[in-house]
Amino acid sequence: MEDVAAGLKSLSFESGLGAEEKELLHLRARAAGLAFCRCAHALYLCELVRSLRYRCAIRGQTADRATEEAPGGDGDLCVGILGAGHQGKQLLLSLLEMTDIQPAHVKVSTRRPELAVGFVQTGVECFFDNSRLAAWADVLFLCCLPFHLPKVCAELRSHLSEHCLVYSFISAVPVTRLAELLGHNFILKPQYDFVGGDTADVWLSCTAVSTALKDPLLIDASCPLAMSGGISLSLNWACAVLYTLLNICTSASLRSSDALSLINELFQEKWMHAVQLNTESFISSSYAASLRGDEPFPWISLTEAQNKETPLLRFLSSNKLMQQCFSAAYKSLLVTPATVTL
Image (cartoon, rainbow, N blue to C red; front, top):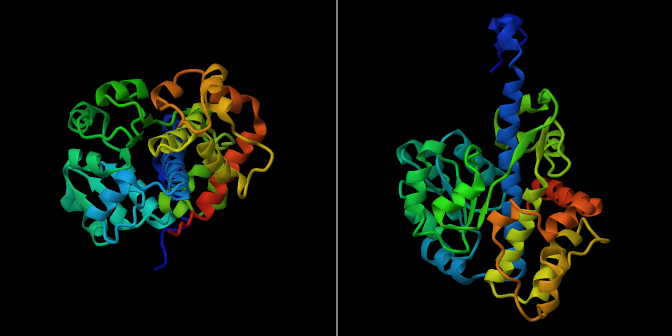
């Protein structure tokens, strides 16, 4: 159907604004850019985790849960979304449309599950039971409002597996506070900052994130460690993503040498040939010297990794090639999601 209002400036959003209000128009682009980047970076993490899990044939508890609760029991990544407001719905649509994660491996806990009929028809299970979601998920996305957080964390605290990755979209609450509320240290929270005075208008086309994720220009603008469009992402986030991959290998009791090999393969296969992550890239030289190749890496607290200067932060800060490869992997995985065959 043709839009009869197209091109009529008198009906545009800006036409009814006063001079002072027009000075705040850049906030629209900022909000749209944040929503896009949050979803895009969350999808990147999921694709990296899925690819690593299959490479090292990690099944364990995940396979048991998948066999019990999902058709086929193929041990795929179990993704939980807590909260079905605007951000939660955008993330859910993006997961379904832009990744190979099956709807049966996605569950949503929301106070109004009756409003999610459209998602239920796709195969996504929606209910209101935060503790059940926590016990099931491998990756749990927090998309609730900040003032709900104390109650939500109280419901999650005793049900979270040590190896469940909690990914927070709640910008107002620092990761240290989340760790305290949850009694959990496997938490990843992106920290976005705004560069310059205004956020670029490139983000104004992000009315629907799942559709915008198909736009190469927006993928480029949101590329981690090389972001444009007035938004930047802390290098600590990239470090936390790599430590997440390391912890997944540790949870599977993989030897440190095998863990390094598998993580390097994720980036070397298509995007990196000259850079090798080694033991001292992740842990101190003194600890690395005492770690045998047949021993797993120690469990890394992501809370500390995002708030302290780590060996990995020093490595990434001084290695531009590795930063470029991390970003190149992002572009490739979002444009062509990792397809994994058992």
